[in-house]
Structure formats: structure tokens, C-alpha cells
Image (cartoon, rainbow, N blue to C red; front, side, top):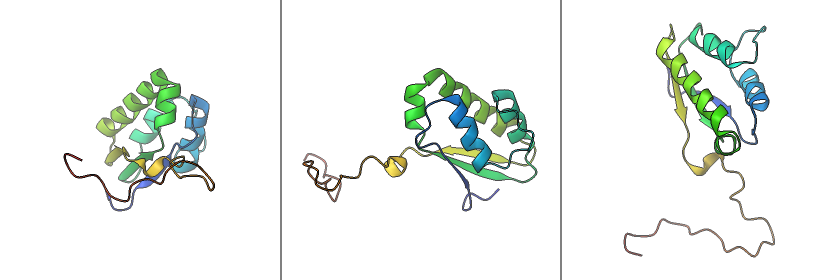
Length: 122
């Protein structure tokens, strides 16, 4: 498994299960007959032919819109990691990298973001 060459599962804009499954189909090496359901995803990831690292980005909106489905998605990904025959790692990106709405729009009255993190006590 190579963590320096991960597959990115970008969930930016995903707010429901159907869109989540669509993104999985586009980003991951799933079988042609992938059933677009939780069991099929778990089985497909566990049966990958090569070791893989998956970085999940932009997942926050989905987690907020469908917390129960997001919990199931996390369980499925976790189970796939545990049962993978070839080696699978799934990493959730926690930073703002996937938050494309943070950019100040041109002409916005919002002040620009600080260029550095404040020192302790500021």
C-alpha cells in the first residue's frame, strides 16, 4: 500500500446516498456491475486486487445533510479496511482543503483571512 499515491474520493457537493455512490463509482476501481448499495461497496472494497489508500475529501456537507447515511458510510469504509485482502487504508481529510466556499468572492465585503495563525494569547 502506498500512502504517497492515494485515490481521492472527493465528496464536495454530495448531500445524499445516490450522489455518494456516484462519486464512488467515478473515483474507485469498483466492478462494472457495482450495485450502488452499502453491501456492494463493502464487498467491492474488501475485494480490491491491489493495496490502496483512499483519501476522502469534502465530506462535511454530506455528514451534515445525512448524518445517518454518513455514519453507515464510515462503518462500511471501516469494515472494508478490516477485511481487505490486499490492504486498504481510508483517511478522512479534516482540513479546509476541500472547503471551496472559503474563498472570498471578488467584490465581497468580507475581510480577507489572516495570513498566519495567531500566536497563543492573541
